[in-house]
Image 1 (tube, one colour):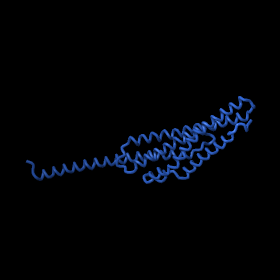
Image 2 (cartoon, rainbow, N blue to C red):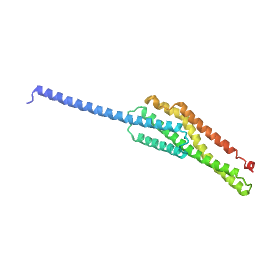
Image 3 (cartoon, rainbow, N blue to C red):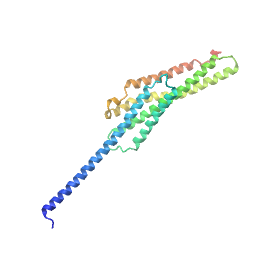
Image 4 (cartoon, one colour):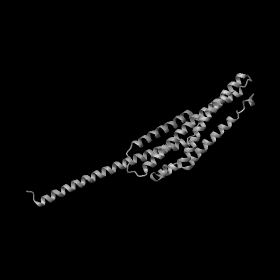
Length: 227
């Protein structure tokens, strides 16, 4: 028979093993949760860096406009994948972080998409305007010239409508961005936050470009002035 002393020792050992196993399991679960939280924060960090770059981007002379446009769409595509990864991640127990991160990522993705879209339409309008200017300077006072001038103007107007829709959507998103950023701010380092001046300057550039394009288009409102 097992003595009472040995029974007590055995029971104590079993309790120690059980306690140690529970503690080890808890530590592993805590580590996993911390890693998943860090993964979410990394998605926010990478998105913030990409958005800041896209809002501040102004192509230098050595960089083609097409390269800039491609970079904008690349940023949007990466952030879209970030959104998908966040949706497929286990974020229970993160409190407000998960919702704030989703709002921030989705808002940023939409800004990037509209930034790229407005740039694409702007380039099209600029090219069409240039062709219209060249055509107007080549006026030979024939019926064919008038017909082609009207067609060229219609192409500009069509492109401008698309540009205006994209740029208006972009402006609305830029105006809503501070709300999304305020939600994520308590969870990230201050250095990751995008300064309001960067957002406001991007807003002003879009508004100014749209206004100048419309002013240029208004010059050709009455084609008879160029006959």
